[in-house]
Image (cartoon, rainbow, N blue to C red; front, side, top):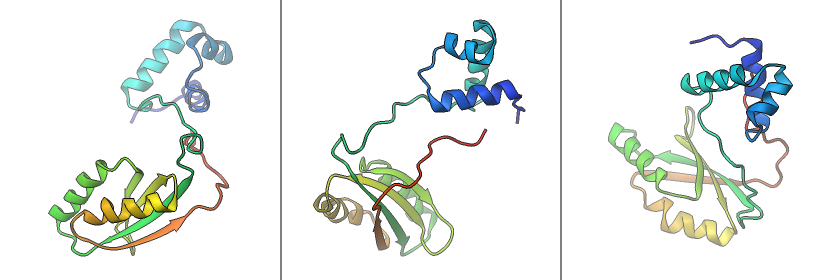
Length: 153
């Protein structure tokens, strides 16, 4: 893996905080000219350090204020069943994140919906129809204490 120097790290921190910063603004903050900043960004993109640029939306304004963490345990752990679950979960737009876990549960889902009734319908009509699910355990977020989308650089 390619090593990052301090300028690369500062550049990544700046872009994590605000991906809309222009190359000119980044160059001024880093005390560099435009060309080296542009080249560094392209290099970091090509190396895979920068995966994508996104807009972070407000879930409340979108009418999806309820965040649920759903623990899923599978009945059988055959490769085909696991792969089927992973394929099917990709199709569910309510699922914001899905992690294959080690420990007592097999998968952890992060789901955002507008109401408990909507979540009930999601579980009943979509999630529970995926083959091989043994148990579901849902917990609901009461308040966000800390949320960071950035990584330590």
